[in-house]
Image 1 (tube, helix red, strand yellow):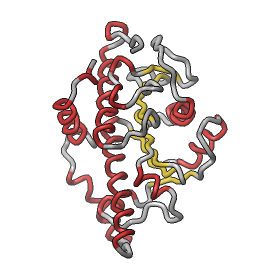
Image 2: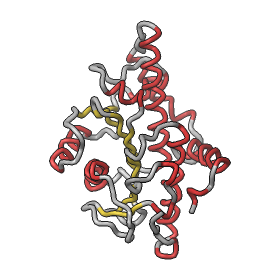
Image 3: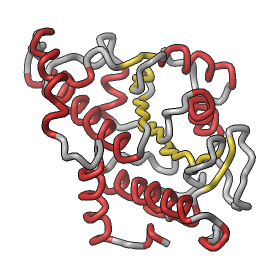
Image 4: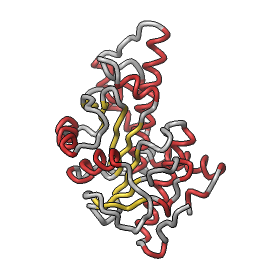
Length: 252
């Protein structure tokens, strides 16, 4: 395997971010959300607004570890001497959000079966479940333009996203972002559950939508069930404990 970044060559904050992101990749593999060597989870390097970490192109999610993540800037320049390439589509899509959205510290893009299925429907995500109701009014949509490698599509992605931080890429998949990785993880988990339930409900019968006034109460009260450590933190920590029992090599 190619050489990787050394812990001694980076700040403690960067190493901590690398471990957090590597853990996330392993969790996605465990959950069945990976897609061979494709798709991406990126995380901005603390204290370096124009630098972010991305998976090494060619490795599966189960092979990602803290030291082999690639550190690049928003222009695509490799900053840590990594010998690994970066997927062009991943760079085009993620760099534009990291460039223009100060709060987009973590960005997750997947091609799960349920996410792609819902993205391919005319209605998109419907308010038919506990999870889907949390996203009502909070999802942006972007029409499919082919594989995302043309810089000019990045401008349309940002424009279509607007003030929202969850996007359905029509006929393509899902995209979530947040100010922390644990929060982005929980958003993705919740969106994935909503999509899975919508697909299952459609097969079971005629889905029944939740009334708007009930959705408003539901969204208002959601914060009341969160622990005070930050959105997604206990959820992510619980999953880190799961993957640690399986394989701790992501920490290296």
